[in-house]
Length: 95
Image 1 (cartoon, rainbow, N blue to C red):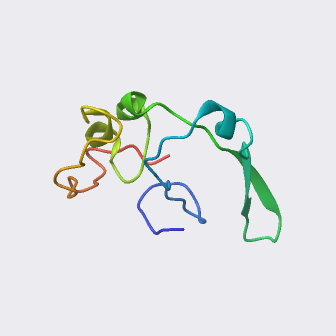
Image 2 (cartoon, rainbow, N blue to C red):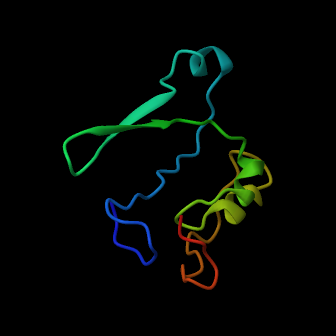
């Protein structure tokens, strides 16, 4: 959970982004739902979605890593400069 501007009430969420290669037979056995604890003690189901790295540019990811990931030449290419542009209300829509 993170503090960030915007109208969404806490808890605020940050995407966890991992770059890995998973074969289709392994992917078929992985979880497709995760449960987030809410402040009132209940939980909320969230869908786990595996996305091709080339499609990440158009996703509302936080931090703003989509453009950098989708620009990689191959899925296992070195990431280059890991510093990303600042996240502001002008370049990000808080959802």
